[in-house]
Length: 204
Image 1 (cartoon, rainbow, N blue to C red):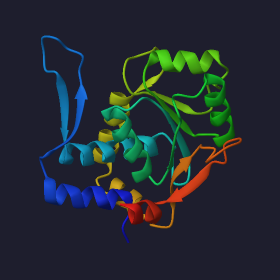
Image 2 (image 1 turned 90 degrees about the vertical axis):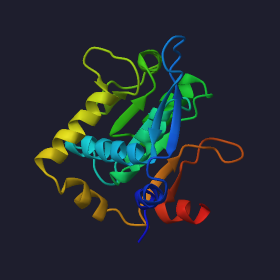
Image 3 (image 1 turned 30 degrees about the vertical axis):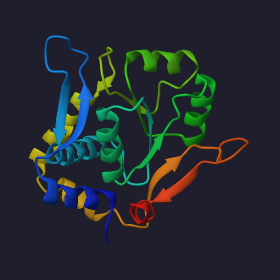
């Protein structure tokens, strides 16, 4: 009964405090990278999952992600999947009109975006402000949830209900969809293929 979160837990068991992710900080004077251990990875994934659940995002709900490759993307992506939700990562190289169309087609319950600039670009291109919950992976905008605030919500939810994450995870099965790929495959309009936990694990 392995899910993608189970695989993360197995990795924590063997790797513990080995570094899992490096994120460049852009700093010339301070640390060049922010690092996350495998234990950090697992703990943040739990926070994200419980934060999403506290906001009404549940099992089977689609959550879109629009971000270049960065540590926060991977933390959010697996947090979505650990919640039993379905992660739909958009192709950032596509024209913004195609991204907005993908959002309209998959009807996400929540949308993670890399930064305020990405949020504004999607909004100006016609992406709906609601009913989806928007989360900024980096930066801040008035009235928009930040990644740090989502994690805080998750920690608060687990503090109020210590068994919350275990119940969430126990409800996720290997045959459940984990990822929605908004891809065309070879040619033509996007087909949007669903992939289960067990299929991804088989590839691993």
